[in-house]
Amino acid sequence: MELTVAKKDLLKLVARMQGVAERKSTMPVLSNVLLAVDGPSALRAAATDLYLALVGRVTVDVSKGGSVAVPAKDLLERLRMMPEGSIHLSTQDNAATTIKSAGSARRYTLRGMPGEDFPPIPGPSEGSPSLAIDVDVLEELVDKTHFSISTDETRAHLNSALFEWDGDVVRMVTTDGHRLSKMEVKVSGRQASATMLIPLKAIQELRRLCDDMAADGKDGANEGAAKPQLQITQSGASAFFQGGGMTFAVRLVDAQFPPYGQVIPQQSEKLVRVPRGPLAEALRAVSVAASERTGGVKLALSKGTLRITTESPESGEGFDEVSIEYAGPDMTIGFNARYFLDVLAALDEDEVELGFGGELDPAVVKPVGPRQFLAVVMPMRI
Image (cartoon, rainbow, N blue to C red; front, side, top):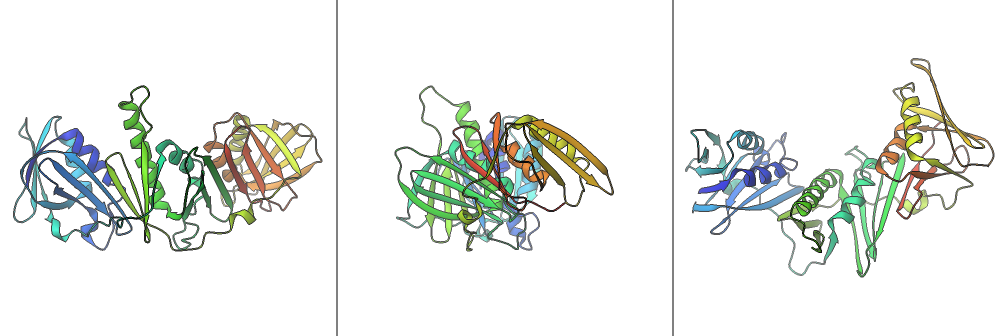
């Protein structure tokens, strides 16, 4: 294989592969990125951990075809150190790959593997159902819910996000058993149906893909230009997200997501309207004095005031209060402060509405505004 490519183009493509390439796998090939000539003027790059796969292309000047798999991290580091401009890339019969600057003496050689040894990259079956979604819609769904995905990989049904497309509504729901987030967006003029459970690692990569596409869209935006979109195809046990010149394949989680409708309180007896910024600041301040193990704080409701307190044998006490719109009965209830802070950080509205039942009932957090978002936070005894 022999070709010439612009450094900035290849660097951007290889950088996108890093989140998928498996650095600590027992299969060395999975820590590699596949580089394969794809036609007279294209280079295809691919990375996979056998559960996720990312494929992208870049325009190159091909002198000789072929393919090679080289260590993803090493390739990225060396590309970063190359001077700006064109890069000449060539491989030998033993898969040794040379990267040379077209305008200086700088050169690197990487020990690679034959491209044929790289695992095959899956693709959707012909005729599989497909739908298109604006990148900013998917980005909002992920940003508003990703924080409540469980990081416990042994609980696959919680270590993932539920994505649903129901008629003209797209929805994402996540829970770790202690809190739940649900975000809905209405997509006018579209009717579709899909349900998929997307693992946490894939959600993290989807965020990066959406961010990259959104940034690319802004860089080349023309007035009146269509919003960038992702094409979503569900095929067998996998889903494929295509957009921005990239194809992202995900093996979906085969598990039953909790019946989230049963977790969300149908109504709250006590409704509190509170400014989001001051509430977050007070929670953050008081949580400094909370137990490191539980992060527990007490919220005490009274007419016009929300008092936040904590006391710990190890770290002492903390206290603050926030003015609120509330005229109901007094009540005190304990929560993990971080769970509330995560929700408040995901929102940008000036005010939020807190809904409470009894002292052992979960709280509901909603933004005051048109956004269809809610979070459920379970109480704790402190």
